[in-house]
Length: 303
Image 1: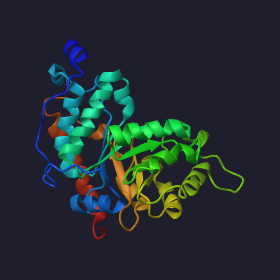
Image 2: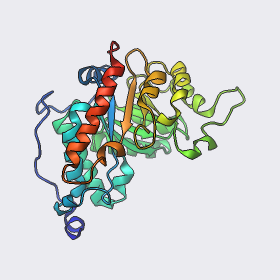
Image 3: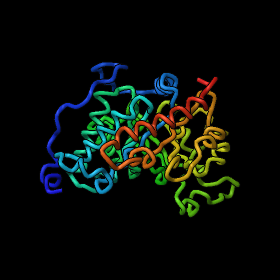
């Protein structure tokens, strides 16, 4: 642990091999068509959540200068063939201060350099007044070069607009989440008879397009995806909660797929913490491969 705290911020050397999909070429944009092409090529709509907690990673990694990055690098290398998206949760990195943020920056760069076909979503849940949102957008899109950021739309259009100004980038709006307190606000009935989360989707559809706007819908509320599809039939839905949180992949696909798939289903703990020993990366790859196989069956005849 002492080595970790003293040396955590040092940039590690080059690791792994570049993606065979596009050797050495980085990209700055990804639209819906390109994302669908990856779903078709990999027969997968899997998003792997990199919710990396230094207290949970295998102990043998603690000898490294940056154990969080080493863990992420190994997970990415083991799962990249089966996923179309990675979603690092910013809180797990921000909790480590400047050194934790550096691990996040290095992780994003590693994915972008070696697996440029894979979408990278910063799960940051930002949402503030316009000029502040503009700084957040610059931080994630210009400096870190992620493809998408999760946002809270509670304060309205001007909190989201700065993110939509970046061509080829995505705003991922919280719509219907799976946490126990979601009903405090999201499920409130409005005077027009709709739920608040439905109004959020209807109103925000006017802000962007299916090429730059996605919605977060929890997998534990899979049956409600059917109604959401009636409101937003063409937009991608980011669906967390499959795996450790108990969401059903088949139920999500049943209610949430459109004719091109239209889903990114996230699994975090069930994949990255499937094993805590020296073979953690291999086991994570096996779990991702299992999900990819199930997804390939659900996609049969569709893409």
